[in-house]
Image (cartoon, rainbow, N blue to C red; front, side):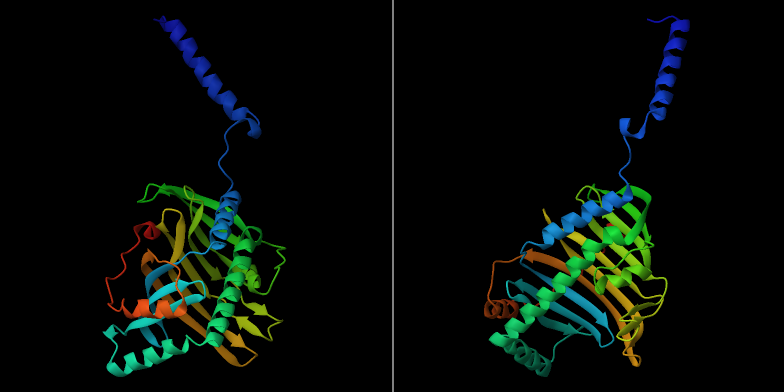
Length: 293
């Protein structure tokens, strides 16, 4: 056993080693991952996952200007097919069911299928472009980390529009006027939540085609629905503006999705038959504790 004087010396050496470690060059000691790198890794995983075909069925409730609608949806190689189950909290009337059957029957038309598939592909491509632009469009600041209910490390990151960012396309122009917060699941390297607000007016096409006013907001939340796949489980869109100088833009939507289950590949007709057999409204979505931190 060390005598008192040697114990004191050992303690001094220990403290000196700690101080020396703090004075080492950054490349020689562990550094926290920069927030921009955390975001970049998550975006890379988002794009990688998005490039694969994932087929699911799920329920979705949307609240908008025309009321509340509950749908059962199923994804197919030719696009997403949905069937309305309830409107404003009530099951469809016989007349509404007839109209819904007629609407879905029209989707079996080959030309309708091609148009729907093309529109979805274009929408997916726009989403990928906007995702890919995020790491370069913003400056990021670390806000803190905590452990979520699933045991994963969740990191809050503030983002602000980066001065000098040159939008590569029209869609990403909105980033030049946006700020907000992200929640990144570092354990899975995925974006769990992004909450962005327009801090100034943004114009598309010199303000001739479209103008979005300050205060517009969007929120997107994602959850792990299988061991290796995430899906959007909540989306809020609130934007006001004008198109072509005079036409008002009013977007006020709130969507929540739940009850995801993988399905085999289906044709549009098979998807229609499947939806007809899944017409029960089902349970309501559970509140996501991770997102409410």
